[in-house]
Structures are given as structure tokens and as C-alpha cells.
Length: 148
Length: 142
Image 1 (cartoon, rainbow over the protein chains, first blue to last red):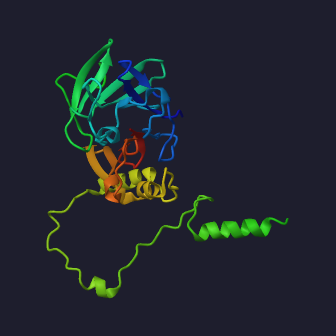
Image 2 (image 1 turned 90 degrees about the vertical axis):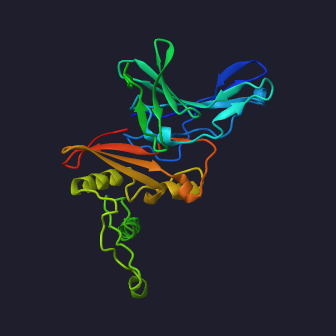
Image 3 (image 1 turned 135 degrees about the vertical axis):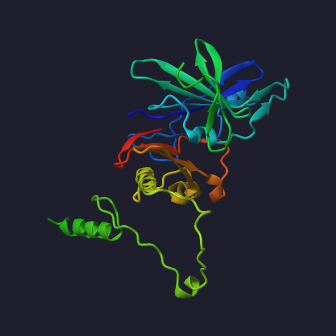
């Protein structure tokens, strides 16, 4: 049940503003009933913001709230990107969104530069763990977990 | 019926090729090296340095791999090289974790670099983690 979607988030230096691309259901592996995937778009098509900087990506999980090891073992080079106009540095991040059956939503972020996972709790980002190898294995911080 | 011979032919062809259209597989027999290659193999005196899986762990791994990449899975990707890579079992690194006597976790992670492929942006969730019980049932996947 459900589909998985991928999207890019990007920064427009001329406006000092952040944008989210359209959602894509493009995938390189067939879905099954239990397992869904999506492939992050490779190209941004926003003719009004040709100097936009891709700061990361977003994807949805129809079945699970947490990141999968596959999500966390992937690389997205470069992990840090710089705006030529202002010299502002961004660390690329991946976000995962999940909506439970009762309507509650959860969001987690993974920073490709620091390899730290954060959870959005009460409007604040809380660091909950660190991915310590390229197999997507996580060491949770003291007292932290996927649930608040 | 004019179409009967055609249907019979298609059914026959699908059986011969091991096609699962009718829910039937013919397991592929392992390829055998010729005797001259076999004669060059020297077997080790000890397997201690090898990867050891106990029987239930091996059975769990087999169940998980058959679910993850069934023999009849059709390659489907943006280009032929990526499709071939994702359809190969040796693209995926496997880990097996025995949680207790009745619960194993089996993880598969794709290593596209093994196929010489480096994508600009990542693929989401193309690996999998299965929870498998001692009866070989899939309890859940991540």
C-alpha cells in the first residue's frame, strides 16, 4: 500500500530562500506490496533559479518512520556545498517523512557531512544518533531513540 | 479455437525458460567448471578464517534473499547497466544478526560501485532488512 516519493530541496542565493521541488515517484527498483523505493532526482528544473544550489533531498516512507540502513549507507557528494555569491556553506541533508495511520507525522534528518541523525520534536531539531560506518549502522546518543 | 496452439506454445516456452508466468520455476543448476580448472583448486586444511553461519541463520538468509530478489524479478531501472546491477545478487552485501533463537535479522545493502556505477544522487530504500523467525517466516521488513 502507498507509494514512496523523492524530492530535492534547494537554495536560491538571489532570494536567500529555500525551495522544495515537485515530488517524484521515479524508481529504479520495482515496488512490492511491502517494499517501496524512490530514486532522488538527478537534475533540478527551475528555469527561474538557474544558480540554485541543491542542499539535499527528501523522501517519504509509507511503512516505516525511521531511516533504512540503505538510506544511511548512501553517499551524496559533495557533502558540503558553497554558494558562490555569498560564500555560505551548506551541509547536504536527507530527510524522511512518515505519516502514521492515526495521522501523526514524523520527520528525521541525516547530515551527509557530519553523519548525524536528528529528529524534529516539538518544532526543534534534536540530535539522536551517529552513523559510524558505510553500512548505515547507527550508534544512538545517550538516552535517545527513534521514539521521543 | 484458433488461439489454442499459440497459448500452448507460449505456455510450453515459459516452462522451458523457467518463467514464473504460471507460478513455476525451474531452479537453475550451478555451472560446472571443466576438469582442467577443477584440478587447479587446492582446498584449505581449515575453514576457521571463513564466514560461519549456523543452519538457522543460513535458512533465514535464503528466505530473505528469495523475498528480496526472487529468481523471476525483472530488471527495471533507468538504464541497462543499472538494471543489470540491481538484479544481480552479488551486488548486495548481506549481514545476519541472531537476536535470539527465534529471531534473525537479515540485511542487504547495494554496492553499486561493484558494477562500476557511481550515481550523482542516492537511491532511497533499495536495500532491505528482514526480520525472520525460526520457522522461516518473514515477520517484518524495513
